[in-house]
Length: 278
Image (tube, rainbow, N blue to C red; front, side, top):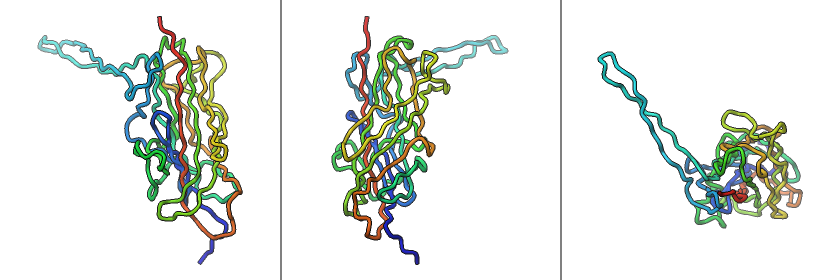
């Protein structure tokens, strides 16, 4: 029987917690990851053109009929349907992160975006302060925003920031928490056609950031200035080993034999720059 010494198995679940809604969880566990569970098709964090928050993205369903002629001379019809967004800035998706097995005092690269929140208190929208796992997130590593304010060539700008809390053990394991530092590297900002969203010759990327539960700092992952990007879907994907890493500072007792699954909550905050209205 093998004895595991000085090993803490960390699974980080990115529980997206936005000041305005979603919460991500970071989880430390055996071959586990940081996960964000999405309970709806979008995170329902929206801003109107004057930056007034709403709980739902404004959308309009429109349809039109096209007509052809059948063999008997009578017309045939079909329907074109589309959802049109206008004047909305919304956070659409946040990623989960799985850093596999780690030890205290080490840095681990991203293993996958599939996480397990079993045994943790999942944020349900009312227990955010007590939650140790997030409810929003995806297994694709996608972080995306839709900006449909103003003319799509003259967007007003926005920032999307992240922060991380301490790593927590499961409710049954109990015990001490651990500090965590999440590192995200620059990733291309692309649209639904996988083209860069920049409206100049210089491609746009996410910012390189490090957020720590020790300092409680937040940092902008997407920081787009007025007129620098094309509107619509704006996304980045964190799903490769070089896209994200987790650091566990060597501040805990590393002499006891243990293997615990742990989670940390990641908070995502979307801030809109004011849109110009005529």
